[in-house]
Image (cartoon, rainbow, N blue to C red; front, side, top):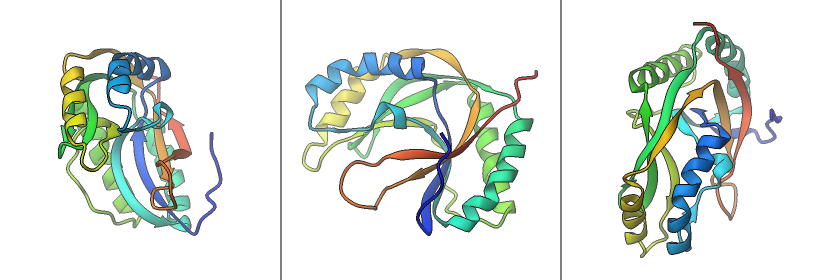
Length: 194
């Protein structure tokens, strides 16, 4: 759902989102971890995404300028075949699921998206792409939870699915207490022609 941007700036990233049935398949595999590690800060399933480019805080005007070129770009791209695979952790605190499938296509897509953003005057810290889907964060002093949950997810192999839409996403990170929530600012379908 497209929503108007309310603040003068918004924290923005460009991403792909697994379809609901692929997310539910992973959520089923996570049920034991949900029960075993209730103190972890679990991301909402509707917020699960694969970040292609994290742009940071942008003025509303810059976000508006990106919409037309991103729409044109998506219309020229074909869907990618991806899957959620295994699990791991960053810094013993962040639990994630890995990505399988067309990783070469995913890296190419991320590179093209980042180049397009820069061509349209938006500068951002270009971090190396590490394809993953963030699931949860351990609370301070409870780092072993993410490590143990990742071990429990290591054998997970999800079905292959098509990434069919490019998402421009805003977050409320740093906007107050409570969990991070994401919302589509806009999303565009990839070309279905092969």
